[in-house]
Image (cartoon, rainbow, N blue to C red; front, top):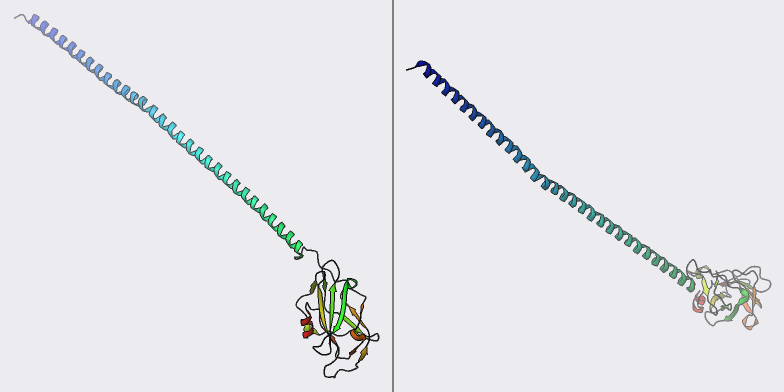
Length: 255
């Protein structure tokens, strides 16, 4: 065997094997690199595919938030409108209430009552008819009557002042037990009464005697009014008294 030819052949086979191995390694590397690139591209594709979905989700959430805000705004506007409506109703109620109070005051004034009505003045002695008469019971009593002849209401305050006789030094004292609970008010044509005790029934009075004149004073007037005595005269002593003005004759004669 030719040794030189053998070695040459072996060398050629070794070189060929090396070339084949290098080619295989290159192919493997190429395949491996392609796989990584594919993986990256797949990841990017996945990311690109999911991105619109996320954006869509974000837009949906934004729409939801906007919808909630719009709804809240509508509710606030509705609430404000309701409050405004309630305020209008309250104003209306207040106006109606004020109108009712005004009408009530008007009615009160028309009826002559209440603090805002025109106050009733004292009776004018020149527009008041005053008479006196004897009564059978109780004995030694007379009844004084005052009638309002004016065209307006008037009042008789307290009791009448009586001066029996021209020489009387003082007015007849009042019976304090007869004081009424309220001042006597007289409409036109109405009358008030006062009972007069002229003398003691048992004759115990002092300084008695007949008098032939009587003057009557009423509150609010300075001048007296002469009143004619029944029969022209009456017996009067220290027991003489007069009652407060009363609204009826029976009460005036009870004291």
